Length: 582
Image 1: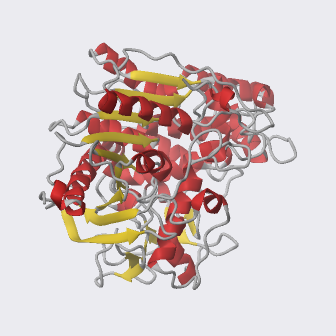
Image 2: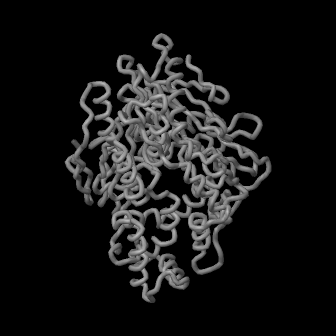
Image 3: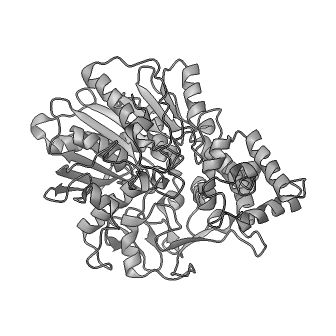
């Protein structure tokens, strides 16, 4: 078997058959759609229960499984896929914290057309965070699928009882087992999160995480099929696929793939930073300050999330306009004029109407502050006790106040949490004052870390500079797919500058800017939201189909592809014709 000296500790090997498959943990599509799979003893869930729920949570966080969304009927499927899993902790040289790697090997692995899909979790999710894309496409086809959490994940460490998450997903005290994450500081308070507090700036190494996961996958295929070994990039096609942060990770991997491991790449809605393109931290911290006011413009009056449950402007957003006016950043005195000013400010920064409209969901759900606090801490390599701008994570009670977590809450984190709080009994606190607009002070502090020139700002900028993607090799088939209405990672800031940069450098990436698609397929079941938007996953599946046909059936790789011109489903169920898939 090939060397995997980057693995930390043992490799776990498990078999998943008989109502406990690879793709859904035995739940099937109906079970994935159902309420959370129960724990018989919530304080002490079994390894099998945790795994099943982690798979279900990852599906629900990415795919539209709503009754009108068409998953399983119009596109996609969740067949029973029995097989084996190999899982371990791995480390990038010099890193403090490991990243989790996992290989799923289906029993129907196609030994005649050796295929390994490698992927990275979306957002800051745990190890199964890309199963709805890479697993759903690859496993039924007979491909093995290698995953990495890319240095993020939901292995939260709780200083209150000195516990983290072991390889099997269960809670363990520091010193009794190797943990997914344990802070370097032995003494602290609150909850420590790997993405924010590892001290590694993991985003800069996402590409290396992906390539290491591919190496792990090849080594585990040697173990699974010793009579077929060795599995190498020369005899096994390695397809990299990911979405959102995972999409950015596979594009980073393409740029650092010096050994030519990858046979092709499909990236959906990628968080990618190009040499001359804007950085996520820049447009995110600006959105946190300005979008609440801009969305009060009348053009967004019927936009989902842009008004409260009664159709009225959000009171806190009205206050934001007043705050910006009091600071002299808005010159006019009426609310509508101030909203128009804020809107024009964002337009001048590159925001489109479509991105602002769907950005209303991120604004209403407080995602800009949540992402900003975590990413600033990661970029500045801060610990749980030293997050910038006074932020901190603490366990909280049902009233949303800081409190000690109970055993059942802690036990569920690995399976249920998204990798960045708040949620699942962990809150984001601090970064506020006693003013009428209490969150503005924290948002402005995060913004100054980008616009300022002190030591903290320089440290943050140095970390962001390390995120710049590198050019992939000229002959690598590469396809970027993004929704034209993406309001979290707008195309103008991500895929468009990346694709333009590659083309200027003599590469020929394929690009679909899909009309009416946005960032969160999982939001489409929400009232009024799915009426206006198409899911992005089916377009990713088609791109992977085309790549597979190119690699295994010698179909020519096109120099260009026409973008589908689908239409939103409206109030009824999704129909195939609406997607306009080729």
